[in-house]
Amino acid sequence: LIYQRLHRRSMARVTVRVGLVACLVAVVAGWGSQPALRRQAPRASRVARSVAARVGPRMDGKYSPAATSEIPVSSAVSDTRPKKVLVLGGDGFCGWPTSLHLSDAGHEVIIVDNLSRRNIDIELGVSSLTPIATPQVRVETWNQMTGKEIRFINLDLAADYDLFLQLIKQEKPDSIVHFAEQRAAPYSMKSSRHKRYTINNNVGATHNVLAAIVESGLDIHLVHLGTMGVYGYGNSGGEIPEGYIDVVLPGGREKRILHPAYPGSIYHTTKCLDALLFQFYVQNDQVRVTDLHQGIVWGTNTPQTARDERLVNRFDYDGDYGTVLNRFLMQGALGIPLTVYGTGGQTRALIHITDTSKCIELAINNPPKSGSPVEILNQIAQTARVRDLAQLVSDTTGTPLQFVTNPRQEAAENPLEVSNQKFKLLGLSPIMLDDAAGLLEEVKSIANKYKDRCDVQAVVSKSYWNKARASAAGEGGVALDLGAMAKKN
Image 1 (cartoon, helix red, strand yellow):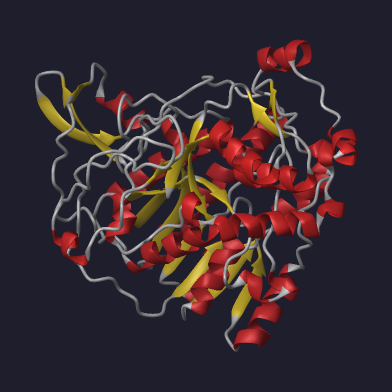
Image 2 (image 1 turned 120 degrees about the vertical axis):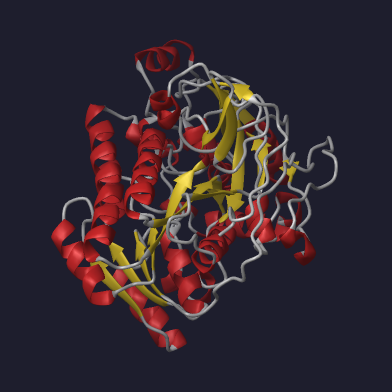
């Protein structure tokens, strides 16, 4: 509903010398620049919800506000009534805590998951640092503790279309939250088999969900977890808006299009393809879709998962699935060098796992109207440079940094400015790193508690983007015996 009273941004117009087809292939919101950890602007007041607002001037420094832009705002009131929600991929790192958060807030939750992430653990020979219970034990524990009811259904969205269609016809959900995609860029680049699996699984699952919604004849709001990585890094030449950009086509024709896409992996490419599917189904069938472009998630537990050991969330630390800050915190807790890829000058967007769950609920409670464009929100708290994150952890643990050859095909340094005002206008006050000393300590304490479960040799990524990156790692990379380093420390 946020685009009902859309104000044109005052950003410089971009002349596009391509046809409309090329414009369509350009997908989703973008990036800008910032050298270090950047604190986002203060939460907007309730009064600001009725106007397009700008926050104060950008500040320099280790923790400084991200640049902001003119924001489209809605005066509509959030629909906070309890809803029936299918959480696809609800057994995963983001899906499980979100399922508990939604249930705790009074929504009826049904988890749909084929447990593919657990099967990938077996394939890679690396388990979650935290010992996670089976889905059945997790759900039973939550239901007994709270008196609420979460249900679990084992179903493969990419393969079991008819079963999924039957499920939504029977349950008639108000909303579907779609986490059910292979989520790791390194895993998607391991081999041609992994690339093909990621494409088939992710795009197939997303299209099956959209097709089933249309075939069911039900008015279901789809909330999809996308990624900020679809925008690429440093390609926008300024702040990345939330989804759309105003351009001038040849002949002086003004047009609003999706922000150009620059995916950096097969995984990110699937999210770009998802975005095109959303555009089609919204225009052709008036499906209501909200696409959330999320930054890198850090943290492990939420207020709900922390209630009982059997509810604990995943903690991935390996080179394929471990997110950068969690991986650094785990290494710092074990006293092994913090492995920084390349120069560490890559700037990334970040969000705490608790805020992921809150953002999903805000999106559910603020759906677009039928016939409205795809609603796109940037789901981040702040941006940070990788080496600054490593230094933050090093300063608190005394663990040195170890720079290693970057397995990814990407720029050594990149700027990043991101607009994230929509969620703030909806009431989100995100967790910031400089306010989160306790949460950082919590992650370190979890790493310490379960350090005996850690395979330290799995920390460094062995998934290379291409032959040139693999060759560079072999010729110029630093061979790290992290196991010996851990014992030494």
